[in-house]
Length: 373
Image 1 (spheres, helix red, strand yellow):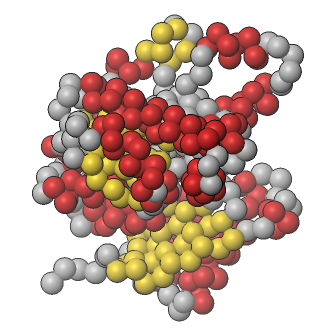
Image 2 (cartoon, rainbow, N blue to C red):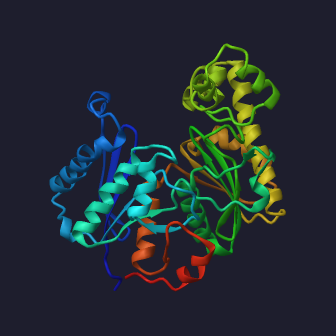
Protein backbone atom coordinates (compact mmCIF):
# COMPACT_ATOMS: atom_id res chain seq x y z
CA UNK A 1 0.00 0.00 0.00
CA UNK A 2 1.30 3.45 -0.98
CA UNK A 3 2.44 5.60 1.91
CA UNK A 4 0.27 8.66 2.48
CA UNK A 5 1.91 12.09 2.57
CA UNK A 6 0.04 15.17 3.75
CA UNK A 7 1.08 18.32 1.88
CA UNK A 8 0.25 21.98 2.56
CA UNK A 9 0.16 24.01 -0.67
CA UNK A 10 0.11 27.83 -0.73
CA UNK A 11 0.06 30.32 -3.58
CA UNK A 12 0.26 34.02 -2.80
CA UNK A 13 -1.32 36.35 -5.34
CA UNK A 14 -1.73 40.12 -5.45
CA UNK A 15 -5.22 40.01 -3.94
CA UNK A 16 -5.55 36.45 -2.62
CA UNK A 17 -3.79 33.57 -0.90
CA UNK A 18 -4.73 30.12 -2.17
CA UNK A 19 -4.42 27.32 0.38
CA UNK A 20 -4.82 23.58 -0.18
CA UNK A 21 -4.04 20.37 1.68
CA UNK A 22 -3.57 17.04 -0.08
CA UNK A 23 -2.98 13.47 1.00
CA UNK A 24 -1.08 12.17 -1.99
CA UNK A 25 -3.54 12.95 -4.82
CA UNK A 26 -6.65 13.41 -2.67
CA UNK A 27 -7.59 17.05 -2.03
CA UNK A 28 -8.68 17.48 1.61
CA UNK A 29 -8.97 21.26 1.54
CA UNK A 30 -8.99 23.99 -1.11
CA UNK A 31 -9.63 27.62 -0.16
CA UNK A 32 -8.88 30.99 -1.72
CA UNK A 33 -8.68 33.78 0.86
CA UNK A 34 -9.45 37.15 -0.72
CA UNK A 35 -7.56 40.26 0.40
CA UNK A 36 -9.28 43.60 -0.11
CA UNK A 37 -7.47 46.73 -1.22
CA UNK A 38 -8.36 48.32 2.13
CA UNK A 39 -6.73 45.43 4.01
CA UNK A 40 -3.57 45.50 1.91
CA UNK A 41 -3.05 49.25 1.69
CA UNK A 42 -2.03 49.40 5.37
CA UNK A 43 1.20 47.55 4.45
CA UNK A 44 3.96 49.59 2.83
CA UNK A 45 5.81 46.61 1.32
CA UNK A 46 4.90 43.03 0.48
CA UNK A 47 7.14 41.86 3.34
CA UNK A 48 5.02 43.84 5.80
CA UNK A 49 2.19 41.43 4.87
CA UNK A 50 4.02 38.49 6.47
CA UNK A 51 1.98 38.19 9.69
CA UNK A 52 -1.27 38.97 7.89
CA UNK A 53 -0.75 36.26 5.26
CA UNK A 54 0.57 33.71 7.75
CA UNK A 55 -2.46 34.18 9.99
CA UNK A 56 -4.72 33.69 6.97
CA UNK A 57 -3.09 30.29 6.36
CA UNK A 58 -3.20 29.23 10.01
CA UNK A 59 -6.86 30.25 10.42
CA UNK A 60 -7.89 28.17 7.39
CA UNK A 61 -6.06 25.12 8.76
CA UNK A 62 -7.53 25.60 12.23
CA UNK A 63 -11.07 25.95 10.87
CA UNK A 64 -10.62 22.72 8.88
CA UNK A 65 -9.19 21.00 11.98
CA UNK A 66 -5.94 20.18 10.20
CA UNK A 67 -3.12 19.91 12.73
CA UNK A 68 0.25 21.34 11.80
CA UNK A 69 2.05 18.26 13.12
CA UNK A 70 0.10 16.10 10.64
CA UNK A 71 1.91 17.73 7.70
CA UNK A 72 4.79 16.01 5.89
CA UNK A 73 5.85 18.88 3.63
CA UNK A 74 5.02 22.40 2.47
CA UNK A 75 5.17 23.68 -1.09
CA UNK A 76 4.53 27.15 -2.49
CA UNK A 77 4.83 29.00 -5.77
CA UNK A 78 8.37 30.23 -6.35
CA UNK A 79 9.11 33.89 -5.73
CA UNK A 80 11.28 36.52 -7.39
CA UNK A 81 14.69 34.87 -7.32
CA UNK A 82 17.59 34.35 -9.70
CA UNK A 83 17.15 32.27 -12.84
CA UNK A 84 17.36 28.51 -12.29
CA UNK A 85 16.65 25.32 -14.20
CA UNK A 86 13.19 23.86 -13.86
CA UNK A 87 12.79 21.40 -11.01
CA UNK A 88 12.24 21.15 -7.26
CA UNK A 89 14.12 23.40 -4.84
CA UNK A 90 14.13 23.54 -1.06
CA UNK A 91 13.59 27.07 0.25
CA UNK A 92 16.65 28.37 2.09
CA UNK A 93 18.26 31.55 3.38
CA UNK A 94 20.08 32.29 0.12
CA UNK A 95 16.89 31.98 -1.93
CA UNK A 96 14.96 34.19 0.50
CA UNK A 97 17.80 36.72 0.50
CA UNK A 98 17.54 36.98 -3.28
CA UNK A 99 13.79 37.55 -3.01
CA UNK A 100 14.23 40.28 -0.39
CA UNK A 101 16.95 42.03 -2.40
CA UNK A 102 14.40 43.23 -4.94
CA UNK A 103 16.90 42.59 -7.74
CA UNK A 104 14.55 40.09 -9.38
CA UNK A 105 11.28 41.96 -8.85
CA UNK A 106 8.68 41.95 -6.11
CA UNK A 107 5.55 39.82 -5.74
CA UNK A 108 3.47 38.61 -2.75
CA UNK A 109 4.30 34.99 -3.57
CA UNK A 110 7.78 35.70 -2.18
CA UNK A 111 6.20 36.31 1.25
CA UNK A 112 4.60 32.86 1.09
CA UNK A 113 8.09 31.44 0.52
CA UNK A 114 9.21 32.99 3.82
CA UNK A 115 6.09 31.68 5.57
CA UNK A 116 6.62 28.16 4.21
CA UNK A 117 10.30 28.24 5.19
CA UNK A 118 9.54 29.34 8.77
CA UNK A 119 6.74 26.80 9.21
CA UNK A 120 8.91 24.04 7.76
CA UNK A 121 11.72 24.93 10.14
CA UNK A 122 9.37 24.90 13.14
CA UNK A 123 7.84 21.56 12.13
CA UNK A 124 11.05 19.91 10.90
CA UNK A 125 9.65 19.22 7.43
CA UNK A 126 10.78 20.35 3.94
CA UNK A 127 9.49 23.58 2.38
CA UNK A 128 9.73 23.48 -1.41
CA UNK A 129 9.13 25.37 -4.64
CA UNK A 130 8.49 23.67 -7.99
CA UNK A 131 9.37 24.99 -11.47
CA UNK A 132 9.64 28.62 -10.30
CA UNK A 133 8.67 31.56 -12.56
CA UNK A 134 12.35 32.35 -13.16
CA UNK A 135 12.94 28.91 -14.74
CA UNK A 136 15.56 29.32 -17.48
CA UNK A 137 16.55 26.43 -19.76
CA UNK A 138 17.02 28.38 -23.00
CA UNK A 139 19.45 27.02 -25.56
CA UNK A 140 22.33 29.34 -26.44
CA UNK A 141 20.83 30.36 -29.80
CA UNK A 142 17.62 31.50 -28.11
CA UNK A 143 19.44 34.07 -25.96
CA UNK A 144 20.52 36.27 -28.89
CA UNK A 145 18.16 39.17 -29.50
CA UNK A 146 19.86 40.80 -32.48
CA UNK A 147 21.41 43.56 -30.37
CA UNK A 148 24.49 43.08 -28.19
CA UNK A 149 22.91 45.48 -25.68
CA UNK A 150 19.92 43.20 -25.05
CA UNK A 151 19.87 39.51 -24.15
CA UNK A 152 16.68 37.48 -24.43
CA UNK A 153 15.62 36.05 -21.08
CA UNK A 154 13.27 33.30 -19.96
CA UNK A 155 10.10 34.61 -18.33
CA UNK A 156 6.99 32.50 -18.81
CA UNK A 157 4.32 30.33 -17.17
CA UNK A 158 6.88 27.67 -16.23
CA UNK A 159 4.88 25.89 -13.52
CA UNK A 160 1.74 25.42 -15.60
CA UNK A 161 3.64 24.70 -18.83
CA UNK A 162 5.71 21.91 -17.31
CA UNK A 163 2.76 20.45 -15.37
CA UNK A 164 0.72 20.38 -18.57
CA UNK A 165 3.58 18.75 -20.46
CA UNK A 166 3.88 16.00 -17.84
CA UNK A 167 0.13 15.43 -17.88
CA UNK A 168 -0.01 15.07 -21.66
CA UNK A 169 3.06 12.82 -21.68
CA UNK A 170 1.35 10.55 -19.14
CA UNK A 171 -1.65 10.29 -21.49
CA UNK A 172 0.73 9.38 -24.30
CA UNK A 173 2.47 6.79 -22.13
CA UNK A 174 5.80 8.61 -22.39
CA UNK A 175 8.22 10.24 -19.96
CA UNK A 176 8.43 14.04 -20.15
CA UNK A 177 12.22 13.74 -20.27
CA UNK A 178 11.96 11.64 -23.46
CA UNK A 179 9.45 13.82 -25.32
CA UNK A 180 9.62 16.77 -27.75
CA UNK A 181 6.49 18.92 -27.67
CA UNK A 182 5.08 22.44 -27.73
CA UNK A 183 3.05 23.85 -24.85
CA UNK A 184 0.97 27.02 -25.23
CA UNK A 185 -0.27 28.90 -22.16
CA UNK A 186 -3.30 30.99 -23.12
CA UNK A 187 -4.20 33.55 -20.47
CA UNK A 188 -3.82 37.28 -19.83
CA UNK A 189 -0.35 36.64 -21.24
CA UNK A 190 0.49 34.01 -23.85
CA UNK A 191 3.66 31.89 -23.82
CA UNK A 192 4.65 29.34 -26.46
CA UNK A 193 7.33 26.94 -25.23
CA UNK A 194 9.43 24.44 -27.17
CA UNK A 195 9.97 21.51 -24.76
CA UNK A 196 12.85 19.23 -25.74
CA UNK A 197 13.49 16.19 -23.57
CA UNK A 198 12.17 17.86 -20.40
CA UNK A 199 13.73 21.29 -20.99
CA UNK A 200 12.06 24.45 -22.32
CA UNK A 201 14.79 25.39 -24.79
CA UNK A 202 12.95 28.36 -26.31
CA UNK A 203 9.96 30.42 -25.18
CA UNK A 204 8.79 33.98 -25.65
CA UNK A 205 9.03 36.45 -22.76
CA UNK A 206 5.31 36.53 -22.03
CA UNK A 207 5.63 39.40 -19.55
CA UNK A 208 7.69 41.99 -21.35
CA UNK A 209 6.62 42.40 -24.96
CA UNK A 210 7.67 39.29 -26.85
CA UNK A 211 5.77 36.76 -28.95
CA UNK A 212 2.08 36.91 -29.92
CA UNK A 213 -0.18 39.61 -28.54
CA UNK A 214 -2.58 38.50 -25.83
CA UNK A 215 -5.68 39.80 -24.01
CA UNK A 216 -3.66 42.46 -22.15
CA UNK A 217 -0.10 42.38 -23.56
CA UNK A 218 1.26 43.74 -26.83
CA UNK A 219 3.69 40.98 -27.75
CA UNK A 220 6.20 41.82 -30.51
CA UNK A 221 5.97 45.39 -31.83
CA UNK A 222 7.72 47.08 -34.80
CA UNK A 223 10.84 48.35 -33.03
CA UNK A 224 11.35 51.57 -35.01
CA UNK A 225 7.76 52.69 -34.48
CA UNK A 226 7.99 51.79 -30.79
CA UNK A 227 11.17 53.87 -30.32
CA UNK A 228 9.61 56.86 -32.07
CA UNK A 229 6.54 56.54 -29.85
CA UNK A 230 8.76 56.47 -26.75
CA UNK A 231 10.36 59.79 -27.78
CA UNK A 232 7.16 61.44 -28.99
CA UNK A 233 6.66 63.21 -25.67
CA UNK A 234 3.19 61.70 -25.29
CA UNK A 235 4.13 59.03 -22.74
CA UNK A 236 6.30 58.53 -19.66
CA UNK A 237 8.46 55.40 -19.32
CA UNK A 238 5.91 53.81 -16.97
CA UNK A 239 3.07 54.61 -19.36
CA UNK A 240 4.95 52.97 -22.22
CA UNK A 241 5.58 49.87 -20.12
CA UNK A 242 1.84 49.75 -19.43
CA UNK A 243 1.22 49.93 -23.19
CA UNK A 244 3.22 46.71 -23.46
CA UNK A 245 1.87 44.94 -20.36
CA UNK A 246 -1.61 45.79 -19.12
CA UNK A 247 -2.97 48.00 -21.87
CA UNK A 248 -1.77 46.06 -24.89
CA UNK A 249 -3.39 43.35 -26.99
CA UNK A 250 -7.17 43.10 -26.85
CA UNK A 251 -7.30 45.94 -24.30
CA UNK A 252 -5.58 48.28 -26.77
CA UNK A 253 -7.83 47.40 -29.70
CA UNK A 254 -11.14 46.63 -28.00
CA UNK A 255 -10.96 48.15 -24.51
CA UNK A 256 -11.36 44.80 -22.74
CA UNK A 257 -9.32 41.71 -21.82
CA UNK A 258 -12.48 39.62 -21.34
CA UNK A 259 -12.51 37.05 -24.13
CA UNK A 260 -16.08 35.99 -23.36
CA UNK A 261 -17.14 39.59 -23.98
CA UNK A 262 -15.14 39.67 -27.22
CA UNK A 263 -16.75 36.45 -28.45
CA UNK A 264 -20.20 37.86 -27.64
CA UNK A 265 -19.38 41.02 -29.59
CA UNK A 266 -18.32 38.87 -32.54
CA UNK A 267 -21.65 37.00 -32.41
CA UNK A 268 -23.42 40.37 -32.46
CA UNK A 269 -21.62 41.37 -35.64
CA UNK A 270 -18.71 43.45 -34.32
CA UNK A 271 -16.31 43.21 -37.29
CA UNK A 272 -13.34 44.81 -35.49
CA UNK A 273 -13.67 42.34 -32.60
CA UNK A 274 -13.67 39.45 -35.08
CA UNK A 275 -10.64 40.77 -36.95
CA UNK A 276 -8.60 41.34 -33.77
CA UNK A 277 -9.53 37.94 -32.28
CA UNK A 278 -8.55 36.15 -35.49
CA UNK A 279 -5.29 38.11 -35.59
CA UNK A 280 -4.45 37.03 -32.04
CA UNK A 281 -5.05 33.38 -32.97
CA UNK A 282 -2.99 33.90 -36.15
CA UNK A 283 -0.03 35.20 -34.14
CA UNK A 284 -0.23 32.29 -31.68
CA UNK A 285 -0.31 29.82 -34.59
CA UNK A 286 2.70 31.54 -36.17
CA UNK A 287 4.62 31.25 -32.88
CA UNK A 288 3.76 27.54 -32.69
CA UNK A 289 5.13 27.10 -36.21
CA UNK A 290 8.33 28.82 -35.11
CA UNK A 291 8.61 26.55 -32.07
CA UNK A 292 8.26 23.55 -34.39
CA UNK A 293 11.38 24.67 -36.27
CA UNK A 294 13.25 24.96 -32.95
CA UNK A 295 12.49 21.25 -32.48
CA UNK A 296 13.61 20.55 -36.08
CA UNK A 297 10.08 19.45 -36.95
CA UNK A 298 10.11 16.61 -34.42
CA UNK A 299 6.95 17.55 -32.50
CA UNK A 300 5.09 14.74 -30.77
CA UNK A 301 2.30 16.86 -29.28
CA UNK A 302 0.96 20.40 -28.99
CA UNK A 303 -0.85 21.25 -25.75
CA UNK A 304 -3.06 24.24 -24.92
CA UNK A 305 -3.45 25.31 -21.30
CA UNK A 306 -4.50 28.42 -19.36
CA UNK A 307 -7.93 29.99 -18.93
CA UNK A 308 -8.37 30.84 -22.62
CA UNK A 309 -7.89 27.18 -23.53
CA UNK A 310 -11.51 26.73 -22.35
CA UNK A 311 -12.61 28.66 -25.47
CA UNK A 312 -13.50 26.32 -28.32
CA UNK A 313 -13.78 29.36 -30.57
CA UNK A 314 -10.24 30.61 -29.95
CA UNK A 315 -8.49 27.23 -29.84
CA UNK A 316 -10.36 26.26 -33.00
CA UNK A 317 -8.94 29.28 -34.83
CA UNK A 318 -5.43 28.16 -33.87
CA UNK A 319 -5.93 24.45 -34.54
CA UNK A 320 -7.05 25.01 -38.13
CA UNK A 321 -3.60 26.46 -38.84
CA UNK A 322 -1.33 24.11 -36.86
CA UNK A 323 -3.15 20.77 -36.83
CA UNK A 324 -0.80 19.41 -39.50
CA UNK A 325 2.22 19.71 -37.17
CA UNK A 326 1.25 17.27 -34.40
CA UNK A 327 -1.73 15.99 -32.38
CA UNK A 328 -3.33 18.79 -30.33
CA UNK A 329 -4.35 18.31 -26.68
CA UNK A 330 -6.46 20.59 -24.48
CA UNK A 331 -5.60 20.99 -20.80
CA UNK A 332 -7.45 24.20 -19.84
CA UNK A 333 -7.07 26.13 -16.60
CA UNK A 334 -4.18 27.41 -14.52
CA UNK A 335 -3.61 24.13 -12.59
CA UNK A 336 -0.94 25.75 -10.39
CA UNK A 337 -2.05 24.24 -7.07
CA UNK A 338 -2.25 20.78 -8.62
CA UNK A 339 1.18 21.25 -10.21
CA UNK A 340 2.75 22.30 -6.91
CA UNK A 341 1.23 19.33 -5.08
CA UNK A 342 2.30 16.88 -7.78
CA UNK A 343 5.87 18.18 -7.73
CA UNK A 344 6.08 17.94 -3.96
CA UNK A 345 4.74 14.38 -4.07
CA UNK A 346 7.35 13.41 -6.67
CA UNK A 347 10.00 14.61 -4.22
CA UNK A 348 8.50 12.87 -1.18
CA UNK A 349 8.25 9.57 -3.06
CA UNK A 350 11.85 9.93 -4.35
CA UNK A 351 10.71 10.05 -7.98
CA UNK A 352 12.40 13.41 -8.45
CA UNK A 353 15.36 14.80 -6.53
CA UNK A 354 15.64 18.38 -5.35
CA UNK A 355 18.21 20.65 -6.96
CA UNK A 356 20.68 22.93 -5.23
CA UNK A 357 20.02 26.68 -5.32
CA UNK A 358 21.49 28.46 -7.16
CA UNK A 359 21.79 25.70 -9.72
CA UNK A 360 25.18 25.31 -11.44
CA UNK A 361 26.55 22.84 -13.98
CA UNK A 362 29.00 21.63 -11.34
CA UNK A 363 26.10 20.49 -9.15
CA UNK A 364 24.33 18.54 -11.89
CA UNK A 365 26.09 15.26 -11.12
CA UNK A 366 25.41 15.66 -7.39
CA UNK A 367 21.70 16.18 -8.07
CA UNK A 368 21.44 12.81 -9.80
CA UNK A 369 22.28 11.05 -6.54
CA UNK A 370 20.27 13.33 -4.25
CA UNK A 371 17.72 11.46 -2.17
CA UNK A 372 15.17 12.79 0.29
CA UNK A 373 16.81 13.29 3.67
